[in-house]
Length: 123
Image 1 (cartoon, rainbow, N blue to C red):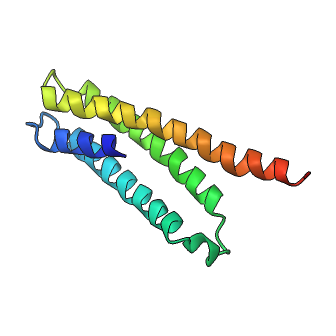
Image 2: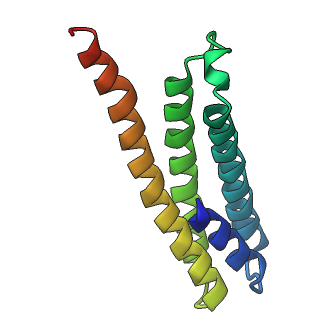
């Protein structure tokens, strides 16, 4: 999620008008990035095949759901506190873009894991 990284950098390099709002945005963006990288590593190295005690599609779905809600809240707060500072407006904009992309990820992971598995039982 390049949009999260760009939003984080934009907020980090801007003069802050409200420390709490922008530190919250940065924490949410970094936590989302770390978790996305975690799931990429799980998929790249096929660790999900060895750790069968965890429902990986459900874990990924919950991560995207919770991360998207927190990112939407952080973007709204950052946008409301930006006071027309260009870097902060850019950070909030990229936060909203990342929110949209996370919603698309939720839909695609649901579609792949739930719909594909439910139709494969009958064939």
